[in-house]
Length: 255
Length: 261
Image 1: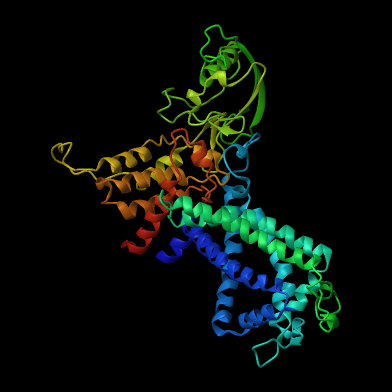
Image 2 (image 1 turned 180 degrees about the horizontal axis):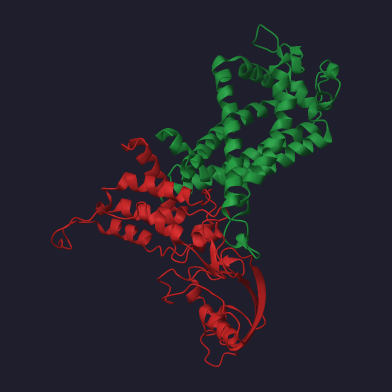
């Protein structure tokens, strides 16, 4: 093994991978959230569709999309592999009586569980939105015109607006953000600790930012589908009819 | 609390103790009753009472590790009622006193659980994995020749204090026992940061961290996920900042050392 593979297969190297990919995914969350918030403008989704088009066509963003996918896969794989390794490290016989709640936070001990829930959510989420908007064979998007652009763009807004009229789907999205919030509650600050960025001057600020990031990001992500569910202003264009039930359905003609 | 009361009422307790004949044998929890335990006794003295009872009955006494019984050697290592070194923070098992318990309590006593710490017998585990990690790099080079003058190497007081804080680790293994991942990172970080802070530790600075981390991984300890259970249960208060220092040392050693292997 070369020194590079040795470094990144060691226990510290592996957590550096978790930290770097995790913090990178945090930056993505921020961009995603800012674009999602465009849906709450009362403009029939023009702003949202404009930015969705930008994210789908800008070459730099498309390049980062590949990095993002690799980052997500690496973070998930490494996280699950570490969870299995760490479970094994306890040995065959565990404790009969154990009170970890006396010495640590629930979210910190359950990152693998929270991460698995998020992964399941992400698969459902990507199937309904990302795959459809990137691959025409997987449903594609109806075209719509927005202000300031001379060409029509995909109407991703209608997919979201239609999906967020389905009660169980809104509930799934809102609940998944609880897992996201707890995951970030530990993950954000933990990422800095792993990189050795622990200092009495800066750590309180990192902790505060991490907790604020976890609460604000997950709360806003959860609020958007709920607002769109109850609000009359958020209607899909009838022509598209792209609902999650159709995209998850067996009939490919409806996808 | 009965702590300072010489007339404190003796306690009767139910103990659930992990008994295991040897490394290969299957273990089980065995229940014992101990009577007339003084609240002034240490936890280990309470176990001495149990063992005297067992010896009188001709039974095998419960094996547990202990040495100084002053909280400085790091030998005693019991997982008591679901906590490393019991319910009191900042204390080793020997410094845990029975006044922390009440008459009629049931106390579950288990050995440290880690794949890297196999059970020798009952509550005694083999912690030689720690010795091998220290042998891999937890030392400094010392020149031969005359005894150097005490103040020959000036070390600023704040740095000496920080190094000393890390050096207070007694290698009891509570960090591994408490950690959900059975990670030895706090133990390794204490030694690495202690020696990285001091001028004497500079010679082996990068090989030390590389070799100690490699040995830690070889021993089968889990990987750190910054849960913080180790520092919360550490009897001498080694802080998580040491793990951050270890991570920094590791990153810079890997990036700059001449070690290609």
